[in-house]
Amino acid sequence: MEMKRAVLKMEDPIPSLFSDDYFTLISSNPSSSSSASFMDYTANEGGFMELLQGVHDFGSLSSSSSGWFEEAAPSSNYQVWTQPAKVEAPLNYEAAVATTAAAADSAAAPATPCSNSSSISSDSCGGALNDDLSKPPAAAAAAEEEEKHKTNKHLKAKKGSTTGNEKKKKREREARFAFMTKSDVDHLEDGYRWRKYGQKAVKNSPFPRSYYRCTSASCNVKKRVERCLNDPSLVITTYEGQHNHQTPLLQHRHRHSSPSPLHLLPPFMHSDQLTPPFNYCVSSRIPTNTNPNLVLPPAGSLLRDDGLLQDIIPHATIIRNN
DNA sequence: CGCATTTGACCTGCGC
DNA sequence: GCGCAGGTCAAATGCG
Image 1 (tube, helix red, strand yellow):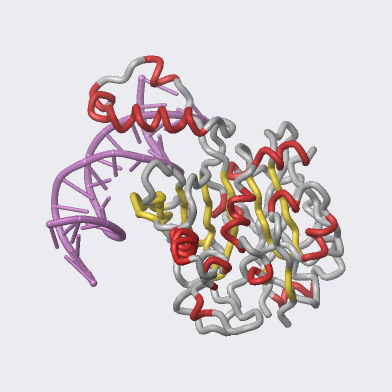
Image 2 (cartoon, rainbow, N blue to C red):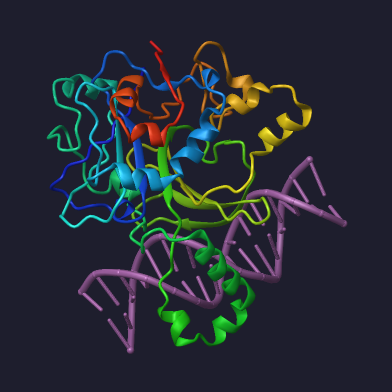
């Protein structure tokens, strides 16, 4: 099975993606022969949707981690890095996506953000991730909402003339959560309904970035979807904000009071893509047996990483897929 | 017809 | 101040 890996080197420049806001990158370590890469969502009531919501609870992240990255144990199959606070020291980042072939090489190397294992240039996946999270820290959603309201209300007026205060006021952003998945479709099903509101070409990348907004009224959650520059099969999804409503799937389930298997699936998964026990599929176009390589930490690291990973992934357990 | 997507224009922040 | 790049808007268009 093909595994993915994100490598962070402390001496490289921080990608702007990580330079602000609470951010979590969940990636796998290819160095393990036991290639666990799928989460046993069926064993958890909330599934990945709750996982995402849990990840959005960034308060716990900020309070439980002291450093820029929370380092996973070297023996773990996956690494989970979080950026709970602004970084002072110069750090360097690399998100290297290694296939199983490369995995053997780095098997001996400690799977830590400080690892000296193989690196790639800055315009790799790290570069793809290197978008503008370098904005002011996450602030209250209300502030953002208010500003957004202002923006919408006075858009035309602002186009003509902007007050000094508004001009100077820094844009505040919601906390973000990004992850990479292996998929041939950009927009992965996650249980929520999204409306695409923009698409931009990414500098130095042939792949555009798409912008989506949750269609639910009063929910201002956004997500951005782009492809990894180095490995176009990887989709980088960045969620911003927190849903203030249930997923349509959950609502449907509650209405009918009979458990729907759909709500137990991770985002971007359909029930018809499931072949028990663990053949989850990211893409609706990918055959059931194709591994999506949603990069998530293994049970070992989850259990080991007291206080952090449990906050990120509240109920998740990992099953093996080999 | 209603909703989603596309796409060019505009706004904003940041670095030089 | 200027230019660049990311982010957003909204009219036009497409689709079921």
